[in-house]
Image 1 (cartoon, rainbow, N blue to C red):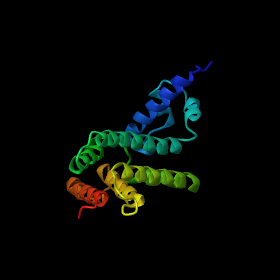
Image 2: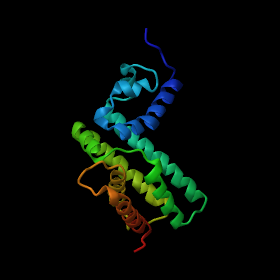
Image 3: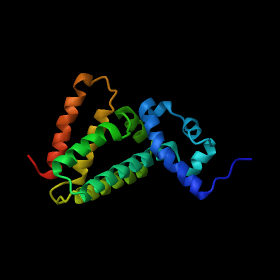
Image 4: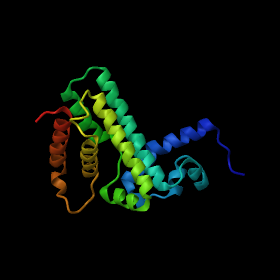
Amino acid sequence: MPKIFSDEEKQFHKNFLLDNGLRVIMENGYKHVTVDQLVQMIGASKGYFYLLFPSKEDFFLDALAWQMEKNYKQLEEAVKKGVSSAQIAELYKEIFKNRMHFANHEDAAYVQQKISDEQWNRFQEYQESFFLRTIKLLGRDTSQCDPKIVSNLSAIIFLLYNSRDKYLFAERIQETTDILLHTFHAYIFGEA
């Protein structure tokens, strides 16, 4: 008989998977991580995974949103402490380099092909609202700082940091990312 988990245990397992499953996907590639491998992390069955998430693709999108919310909380704490815009730029850099679990371009494109237009539109709406909140948090005028542009810049930086693409010059990824981060910061804070 399968184990029955309490609501608290289910929430703990879901959060654990959201925190750690995306890291596993980032390290091994989306196609190389199975639902069985994900549920092994929590000692549960494949059916239990589908109780928590409608699909592996939904899990992937939920995990991205979960990670983004964790990063928002870091920014929110920094803003509450009154850090300078230069310190915010350094925090962004730290998040992009060391704290953000994402996937490479190939994995993101693969997932996008597997999901419905409705799922993708819902995720894009989430991203737009997330970056709108971020822009407001940073005290910027949303009429002069488009959340879709911020989202695009952010996605490009994440994908570049985690790129395994052979068409890029690997030895120049760090420098390229630094330029993009500078552009990202300048756009958000209106600094040329």
